[in-house]
Each structure stands twice: as C-alpha cells, then as structure tokens.
Length: 210
Image (cartoon, rainbow, N blue to C red; front, top):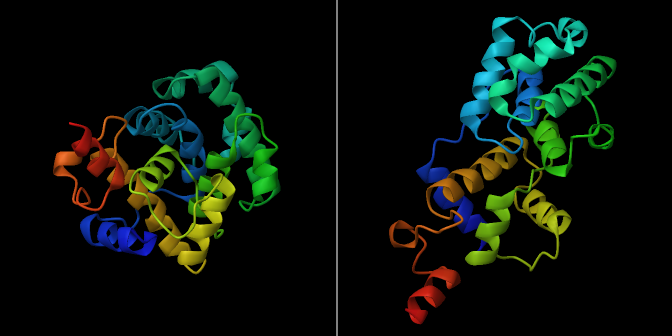
C-alpha cells in the first residue's frame, strides 16, 4: 500500500488540524513531558506549569527551584530527569529566541531524535517529522511503500519527500500514524475492526495461520 493512500485515508477519518495545541514553548515543553508516559499525565503536568504562568514566562521557569518544578511535573513521571531537561531546553529556547536547531536540541541530555523532531516540527515549523513506535509498526505490518527503509532516517526522508516538505502535511502525517496506531495498530493489533485488514500483510498472514 502506498503511504499516500494510507495518509489520505487517515486525513479523511481523523480530525488532525491543530492536533498538538499550545504555544510554541508549551509544545516544546510538552514534548519532554510526554516522554515515556501517556498524554493524560503530560497534559496534567503542563496545566500545573500553566497555572503558575511558567509557560508564558520562560525566565521565571529558569529560576524556579528544582524541587518546586519537580512537584509541578510529577504527573508526567520521571520528574527529576525531566525537570533538568526542561530547564536546559528553556535556556536554549531563550538564547535562540524560540528557534533552536535540531542539532542544538539533540545536544541536550534527555532529548533524543523523536523529541527533537517533534519540537522542530510542531514548535519551530521546520520540515521534519518524528518517527515513533506507531510509524515503525504500521510501516512494517502493512507494509507501506515506497521503499524499504532500513532505519528511522530513511523513513523520515521518505515522509518528507511524499509530503513535499509541507509543514502542515508533515504535522498531519505524524498525527495520522499516532491516531491509527492507537486505534488499530496497537502492540496487540485490533485487526478485526481495522479498515486496512484486507490489504495488511500482517493481518492476512495471521488469519492464514489460524
């Protein structure tokens, strides 16, 4: 199945506009908060920061006591590590006036490629796309074409190419993989309800083995 066909299906099925809400700085912070947790905990932690006006005043966030910040973001889990990462990101954010490069983001301990690409795309409007577990899983199971990407970098370049580097399309493409993955292509797949069950090689193989 062509990736364009998959994306077209998702664009028609899901509401993907403004999928990741918030200001640029809030999106950058929430990209850290959501690491290794669910969105429910991340949003609760972000709301705690918003209530203290820390997302609209980054300079205030820098000077807050670590112990206070840790308690505010506790609902997101891993709060000690994340508080350190958030402070380092805030320093960089102020220094670069809200436009840090991907390389600069990756230089911060606690920010890997998925988080750096999420911040770059959603907060800084840079034409890239985060490759997450849903993207890899869907691509492999169906599988999607073109190409047979050997790693995340190749997969990222394919998606950048098929979306013509369009920022809005890249945002919706990432959201599409997440939404479809959460609904159907879970770790334990929900094949019976999946609209792609008749073209998915993994589903057909599974049915043939039963």
